[in-house]
Each structure stands twice: as structure tokens, then as C-alpha cells.
Image: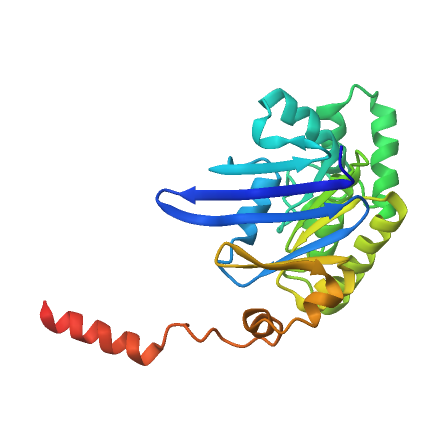
Length: 266
């Protein structure tokens, strides 16, 4: 096994005839936080789904912990998921279950531990995310930030080697967002996890990332240490960092003129 927790090589994927990801190559070392950034439609969510084994690429390889998931059977992928935690954008808690029951789910699915041990492990992880004593509440009783932290407790309850976040700051106020960033850094340092974060939040990305991979229209513009990405003079990266609209963005007046012309031909 190489020293990389994640290694993506020559990844290509299509939706029908359209190429969505084009020759994607990057690595992430064990114990580092890698942020995947890009504008809307850049392919970052599609890339995350491939890393999670939810989509099969057209070609290329995705190695997680030294194992190529593109060649795995369903049973092999099930086993690997014991070492993978995922915190989805909306939290994805089950509303009919208590916070504690939500956190316990991976342990009940992947282990044969007794109920008491499962409850203890669940409460320990709720303590890690500063939700000690909240295990008997329902998700509807939590704030947005608390839901994100409860989902994180569930994602780490199995002590995974890999942790994936999809837009962790989405919908959070600045204080809750900063607290979540601090929590992500704590997990990296305390548990030596390799953490992949998909986000468009620049402030958060530069605060937590050891390395950043920048996507644009399904291609990697740059994959490097955070300081190198911040200093990049690449025009598309600068536009992303400076929040400059794309030069090829749709011109509203031109669009209306075109619609009017087409309507006049009908």
C-alpha cells in the first residue's frame, strides 16, 4: 500500500454522451484534510459520489486505503464502509429516531456489540461533538448546527480512517460554521483521520485545508497545498477566489434578444 489514504487516477465519467469528469488525478495523505472546491456545476458533488462508491466511473481508478473501489464487489464495499464516515449536507438524520438512536445506527449495522456497549460508544461520540446529554432528543428539537454535529457523531462512531463532508457549512450562521471548522480540525489531530470536505466556502476552506483540489467543468485546475492554491495566478482560480463572475457567463440582455428572435420566427 502507498502512503496515500486516497489515490484517484485518470478518472473519467459520463452521463449519457456528456463527459462530467475528465482525467481526474489527485492524492490525499493519511491524516490530512483535503478540500474539494469549485463553482456550481464544476463536478465536485459528482466526484464525491464516486469517492463514496455510489457511482461507477467510465474509466480510471479510485483507491481508498490502498483498495480500488471501482473493482470491488458489493460485499467488499460493505466491509470498506466500516472505515468510512459520511456527513451529508442536510445532516440526513432519521426524524422518527432520537439523536442517540441515529448515532447508534452504524454500530448496529456493522457490529455485533451488545446494546449497552453501543449506547456508551454513541454517547462518547456525542460528547466529542459537544452534544453530551442530547441523546434522548428528537432531530426536530435541534438547531441546524446541532443537527450537523449529531450527523458528525454518527459519521465517526465507528472510528473511521476516512471521513467525508458535503458542504458542512451550508445553512449555518458564521458562529456555528466556525465551531464546525474547529471540530473538523480537532478530529484530524485527535483521530488521525483523512478528511475530505466538499465546499464552496472560501474562509472555511483556507482555515481547515492541508491541501485543496480545484475543479472547473469536470477538470482539475490545481491540486496542491493550501498556500500554493491561495497564491495561484491561474485566471480561473483567481476568479473563484475573488468571486469574479465567469467571462462566459450568460448575458441576460443577449439571452432575452435571442428568445425574442426565436419567438418571432414561430
